[in-house]
View 1: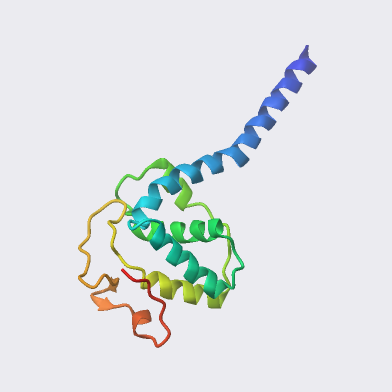
View 2: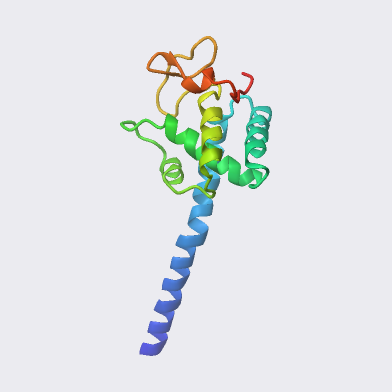
Length: 157
């Protein structure tokens, strides 16, 4: 009887561990991306396709679209997450998990050029901010440095 109880306990523990490691992250990703997708891409599929095309261009098609969206949504979501305001458990858990891909230095530089010039036509996740008339991001009331460079990546607003 003791062996049956121990074997059942081991099986339940193993199943619980598997669910926590495999199934739980998939549920978190599905729920959080559904919420964040409408916030980050307010213009829909066209805006998402442009981001994917630019990203594929400077990574030489190394990553698939799902990996790129995961990276972009996590970085953009973290930028818009306010510290003092309550956020959904699913979104917080998703944004604080590591990304699926790792970019090399040159890809990171190109990504952040695109990221800084990404049109700010949406509200942050927790608070409202004024959107400048030209749609550019401003850091300390100055245009972003990447916008002044000769080779800039921009997305039409």
